[in-house]
Image (cartoon, rainbow, N blue to C red; front, side, top):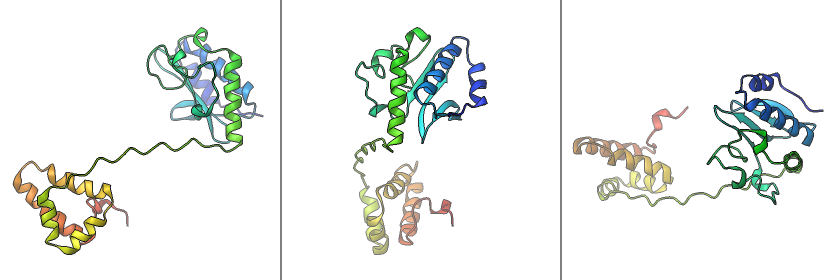
Length: 206
């Protein structure tokens, strides 16, 4: 059997009057679709877990939201989880800005989505990894390269640094407000790099 959480009761009780029937209906439908679901509070929202996160609901000042963790994998032939029900503009969750029960998809559709989400978690299906954004080519000032080449160890170390470690040094030097500050940072950077240190080495835990 599933498990209810008194904190969810309290969450619904303190919500705006318009949101209470919405949240209560969603809660009921989630339990119907997945009787084994366990309630909790996660990220300050009412959340439903079953072998991992299943779905969650939230209430705000003027609207409520409801969404599934693995919604991209849920079959939705009528487009209930897309723009059709997102009439209030961009909103967290998959049903847009819900202001009344009439705005929600049929109960049978929501129950079906819950059952699909349950099956995905039963099968251990994971969301596909988000494609990594291509890195912006890092422009290294000529004066920085010249300074590094004067110290072979520093130059070799810098060449083997990760993109982010290189970027931190480049930004630190190029963001200097005066030439004097830039030159001091450049000298320090070459020294640190020659010692194999990243820009923020002081903050590394031993």
